[in-house]
Image 1: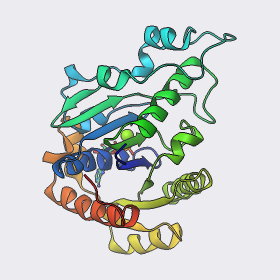
Image 2: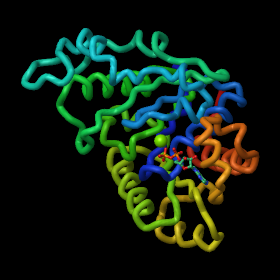
Image 3: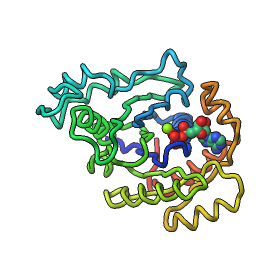
Length: 266
Ligand SMILES: Nc1ncnc2c1ncn2[C@@H]1O[C@H](COP(=O)(O)OP(=O)(O)O)[C@@H](O)[C@H]1O
Ligand SMILES: [Mg+2]
């Protein structure tokens, strides 16, 4: 199978993961790659960032209790039942993805009780589906994560080419990024890098770089009120700011150089 581009995007809530994921999904699609964007956040809004109208927002697969019940053999929400840890999921991407501007969007959602991932049918189902997509599909895959890698099994994490942590100037966001990066490396992700967002002063980039120590910073973007306004109006990220797209194009080039230097993509 053609090795695709498989990138996971993590970071503290609100730093800009979904924004970065949506812009990169468009940019990889512009490179003529088949792009599969996965929303694996418990508060899924990648569809909105990609410009999907509110009445067309796909239902997250985690909400599809009947489907999960059929596939796992157990009723979601009920405790003390046996369920399949390896439910059949290979037919689901084509059935449930939503096509928008040449991008395939699959909205998984995530269980809200974070931590090590619960031992419940929903969690087994999502893990199986994400693992299937990462290991078996050949598209360029971008995963918008809840925060970290808690929901991904080891095999799934190891199938990812690289992890990009988004950070904003702030100790808590940097701490989260460092922790996610450490977890990713411990689980076997080869490449980890960062993107600095919502920067208000160039000096902050140096501080972020020094605190991220050995995590390379691919690029940065300033705090820009236009993005908040666009979010409020539910406008897709590509039409919001050419400057954002330009900076994320540069960061994407840097990422491709770093993660795929010996590989021809496409
Ligand atoms: N550089 C920026 N300047 C101002 N607002 C931003 C910037 N990047 C993202 N935002 C806004 O911040 C909010 C959170 O961004 P989002 O991409 O949804 O973050 P996450 O997915 O990490 O929670 C959104 O309203 C988004 O439009
Ligand atoms: Mg998000």
